[in-house]
Amino acid sequence: MFGPLRSAALAAALLLLASPSLAQETRTLDDMDTWQPPAAEPTEAQVQLIQARQALARGEAGRALSLVDAWLERYPVHPQRPEALLVQGDALLALGDEYKAAFSYEDLIRRYPMSEFFVPALEREFQIAIAYANGLKRRFFGTFRIIDATPEAQEILIRIQERLPGSSLAEKAGMELADFYFRIRDMSLAVEAYDVFIKNYPRSKHINKARLRLIASYLAQFKGPPYDSSGLVEATVKIKELQATEPVVAQQVGADALLVRIYESEAAKLALQARWYRQIDDFIGSERTIRRLMQAFPRSIAALEEAREIPALLERLPAAYVRTCPDYRAIRRALLGAEGDTELSTGIPAQGTPELPATPQESAEPVPPAESNAGSTVTESRAGP
Image (cartoon, rainbow, N blue to C red; front, side, top):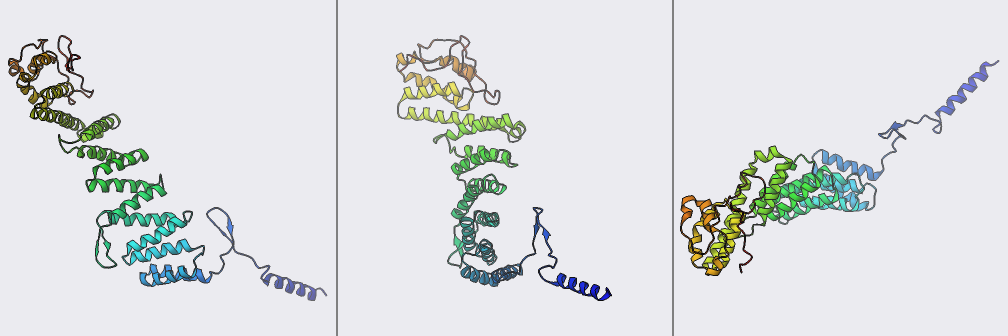
């Protein structure tokens, strides 16, 4: 008697299970360990964007560009617009129009900074900047590549560092920008760019390269004795910092030799000034410049050369002024040996042979003024004019 009832109950249960409201739903576990419902059927807009991506993946950049252009015009406020802009830029890039592609990436970057496509767009712009910085020209109205694009390269590299500070991409952009300035021999901008890189990325694997390039940029700013020598002073500071922080690297690049080169260059500048004063018959100005030269760079070649000019110079100076001068007889004897015993003008007190300080090769300390055995110092006299 229970047979028909059991069959009816089983049929009713099967009917309930077959109904859509009670059917089992398949969910997936995402990266955040959250169960997600099954994906809904793609909308018409999503299907069209998928078709554009697929066309680009197959190498059909022209068709992909047509599809995405139509999509962007039809859906001006769609949530997937950042993705569409990235596809548009990629299609233009594949067609060789990187300049227009940069506009698509820039639109994405400015309007959708919180999008997941923000960083990929910056990476695409970085590649365009590298190409421009290495000599790629812009097209002239879509024809020949004859327009210099280095201003665009600089702007993109600077903006990447501003938009994604502290990232590896910003670090690469900073180094590329500094290397670009170094490559085109714009040393003032190279100094600034390398200095910013060292401050922003002290733990970068390229930090030693940046330090060496910064020193080289400072040295390259010195065009010779007639020109400004402030770069030499800065280079000296950076070289000594390198010797203190990275002694092995400093030894490999010949830091001591660089210091001697700077030492001689600064001395040559003072010697040139002394000669110029003599050319305009300002012999007191020449003597005071030589006095500075002997005090700061006594072991330099320029000091030896100017020491030979002292007898003739003193003969052109007033006797009262000569009496206020340092003991040039002793200085010449220390620098020139027997040659320094040449008779000088009267009135100069003999104070013995001064012990000259060491050059940067012999001592890493700053060069002190030259001192005589009697304790006198080669400095400007207080009684002088």
